[in-house]
Image 1 (cartoon, rainbow, N blue to C red):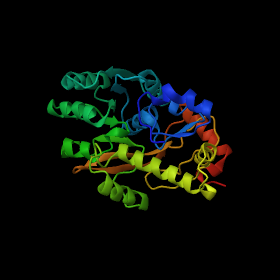
Image 2: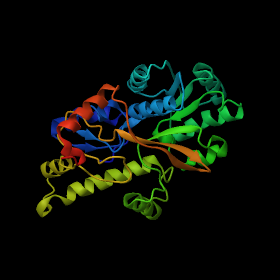
Image 3: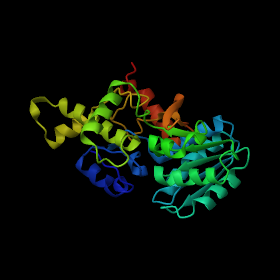
Length: 313
């Protein structure tokens, strides 16, 4: 458990499957979501980008310019926003840019021109790279040249909100797979306490990535605590991990689960957040990621057939 790599699921998934190993990872590659042997606290960049497209369209955008970092899996990621935009009857133009970004000014101009005055820009980058584009847009007076700006989950961090300043308050719509880091709930409170005591050197500090790590740890601890007589054999541990379901945490919109399913996207309902005076705050309460994306539709069908996964009867 605890994997968080761009290619780990793609490289290793056949090996875990052959061993009967059930992995808890923070998924990025498509194989993290398309196998019975992986379940993540996040939904990954494809489905988070879906949610960002939904938020920008709700804000009035009639065309989307979608840009992402040019890393392995861009085609897989791009297919999600394309399906969602099509279902909303909104044209979408897709781009990818090499990272680290060298010329954020030209990228910002390109995206604003592609979106047009009645459109929206959606970014799928790590926080430092997204920040370069957003700051370039601000410096060139482009922030108000489109209806809305959106971003996938990595932008849901106070690091971005502080760096942008108040000019972006309410303007940037971030799809948040996980709650804001100052949420008052018990898991969020414990997360902050753990990070404060043990995570002084964690890159990025409070933010989505460290929330994912904390949540993965909680899931696996619950699984291990369910094993009788401290018999932590490979078989028992993997059966315990697979048996976790209806795990309620205020860090996620709905209960997390593993269970027996052909694929796992337990996190398929998100918030929208936005900067406000140097902090990320909730702008839209939990909403379902569009089932115009085929895998989301399949997962909703799985949950409907086995309501115990999320606590239903």
